[in-house]
Amino acid sequence: MLAGQADVSVSCRIRFAGALRLAGGCRYFDNGDGTVSDLDSGLMWEKKDQICPGVHCVYDSPTGRKWETETLHGYLNVPGDFRVGLDSGMSLDGVVTSGCFAGYCDWRAPNVEELRGIVDLTRGKCGGGTGPCINPIFGPTDFDCYQTQTLAPGGNPNRVMSWKVSFANGELEIDDREYTYPFRAVRAGLSP
Image 1 (cartoon, rainbow, N blue to C red):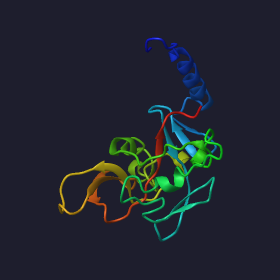
Image 2: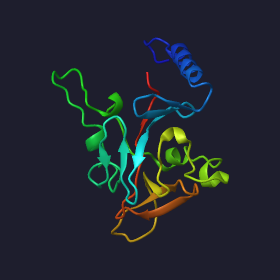
Image 3: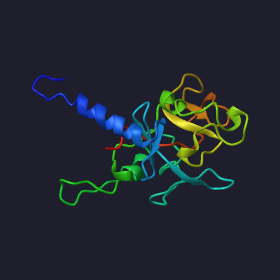
Image 4: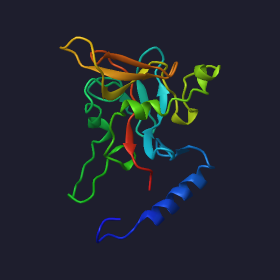
C-alpha cells in the first residue's frame, strides 16, 4: 500500500478468485472477445481464429483483420510495428478512446520468457500426439517459430538477431529479424 492510498489488495484477490472460479480452476480463461487470460501469469493473449493454408498469415476473430506483413500484424521485424493495427484507437472527445483490439490499447510483442511460458510440452507433438505444443484455447497456432521482442546475441553486426519460440517442439531459436515470423500479441493484466 502506498502512503495516502487505499489498500486494494483484498478486492484484487477477490476479483482474481472469481475469475479462477469462472474458469473452473484452469490456468487459461477464454474472455469471449478474441483474448485468453493466463490466470497464472496475469497476462492476456491474443486468440487466433485461423491460419491460412500454405502461407504465414493469421487472423484474429473479432475484427477479421489479416496480419501478414511486416508493417501490419502477424510478422514482426521491429517490436512496435504491429501496434499500428491492434492499438489504433481513436478518441472523438479527448476523453474516451475506442477502436483498440478487445478494448485495450496496450498490446505488444511478448518477450521470450512470456512466450515460452505458454508452450505446453504435454500437448501436440510435444506430448506424443499431433499439432502444436500449446493449449487449444489459444486457437490455431502455426508450427513455425513465433517472434519475440527479446534481442539475442550473434550474427552479422548489420542485422538484429532475436529469440523465437517453436510451437512444433517447444525449443528456442535465434534468427535474423530480416526473416518474418508469426507472433501472438500480449498485454499485462486480467480482464476486469
